[in-house]
Image 1: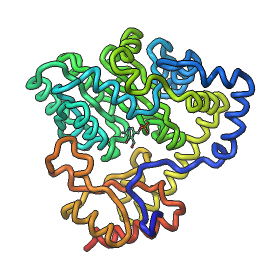
Image 2: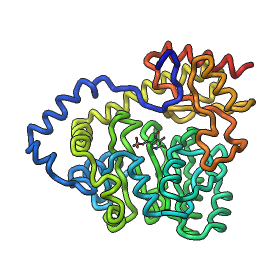
Image 3: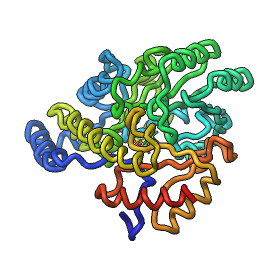
Image 4: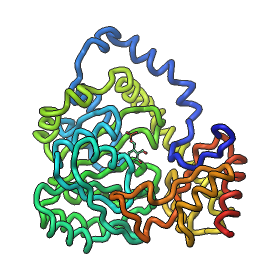
Length: 365
Ligand SMILES: Cc1ncc(COP(=O)(O)O)c(C=O)c1O
């Protein structure tokens, strides 16, 4: 709660108490075992071998294999990866394809890097393959798709396997490169195969630690299609964008993966999220919300204009995000009539309950 506002707008994970309590010890143990000053004096472009081994190990939870570390780049978060990749793969005046509602920072990146975004309509299984193919036919090279197939932002949809296979086939047919953002994938029980395993030669796969370990952890692991892609990523803009991952953050990521605090944090986050999502589903009287795959947010379609509803909610002290805030292109579509409700930011379940009750009241008017 900030200034008496109940914040249901930020899809951030709860803090795992054992992570907080082991923070000092984890980093101290790490630094005492090595030359601490050396760590701070050494460049680590793409990450040290150990950073990349940590990344390969962490993402192997999703891939069902451990990738060669030559394919890995360790960065200061997913946003950092997107800056590098969109610069390299799309570039000025290029066109990026993305779900019609998507990670809002893409808009900022498109303004800064000068590329266009074309939104692809979605249905209840995620991005529509026919619409995707249609755009692939129309748009000239280079073609890049950015997608969040697992716990999509903001719809929380988890794309089924058949749809992933279909998207991979179309991408192959039109030679479309894919950036797969798996930010919340570890929230989901047995999520189906990442697109990166269905079209490995085309896909750049990224998993950050912000959603499933701790928000302030500015570390993301990127797996490139081939080792030479991973090294060429840093050639043009690597230095300007980050040069290399912040040493202490990378060391901490190594420590938390090695001592399994990161794994336990994910388990804790899932437990809290499950209990909180049930509160949301019960109060909004939408049992299906509690049944679907887990994530840090749900999507609530609305009958009335979602922007007005969000404004009314704010006046009543509750912050939620209407669909238009996620628009890939500045154009309101039917799909955007909905609210993204995140439920792990409030300090207590009571605050959450109070906020969702206010929201339920507004939605029922
Ligand atoms: C889809 C998606 N990817 C990535 C991120 C953030 O990634 P990072 O904190 O690793 O930059 C967010 C944060 O909201 C997100 O919604």
